[in-house]
Length: 390
Image 1: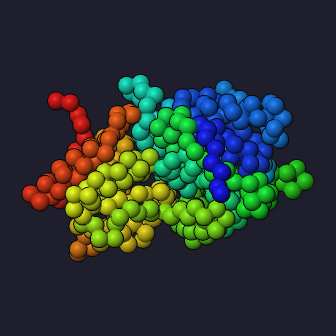
Image 2: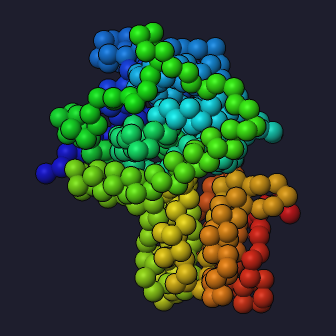
Image 3: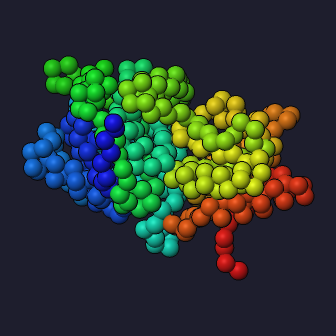
């Protein structure tokens, strides 16, 4: 019998970092990610974890320390949220450009202004083009599991890219959920000690991040683009290996009751579980509705998405961030993925749940109703900020 243990999701995330045998943790406190690094600091201080813990003066410094430690071959971890990520953003581009396999958890939170500590995906969208592999997880078990998945993937010599795990702040970070923890022996087999391909060492001097003239800069960006696009087979390989070990198989695109669905809800993050309740209710009413959940954000899983989406008539894409002046960023990616097909589904976009506003199963049903009516009336690619009081 599988033993389940109840704990706060942030604590489980920290326990996963411990089990991953991380060498360096560098962090600065910001709500709602603080519980992760608080628990890690306790584990290090109590001698339960053999690692160096750096409590630095800012998030910019937190990732800068990880860049330095990872460059010397030390497995490194950090996490942040919202304004902290905004301050850190400069270094995210450096970490990926230097091909340093850092793992970071973002407890997603609204970017100011106005000031808000609640959840949406505006912080993640602010660095969507920073060159990291990026996952969005749906529940606490997925947060725990993806720590191991991310390190194995990042450190693969055919990948060597940093990885972000996006988990919804408060909605996941501060709740208690049941977990199936993995035995340390299995983790050690799945995630062996990191063997860097290149590292800073006085006995073998190398240069990292040197000044690049225009004559070579484009070539370095091309190499980075090839690396992240070429990571897809490795992503699939690592997800399968993790599934073989645990029985929990993850995919870049997750589906729920999509096989015969005319209309698909499209979500990222913890919305998926709530939306599945709405799908069940709609199915009970005899309506042909399913759910497509985007787990892998970068590299964007174009082919996996098309295999599911092109079978539907309508896509109702729910964004948790707004690209001011354009609409929802996830919807724009979905439309780009389907561009050029003569027969493709209509894409109706809602921005919902920003800054932690509740979105219940009944709201997903209302969005499906509204989208189907609008599409039937000819508004095939509409957009709406859902639930705004008039």
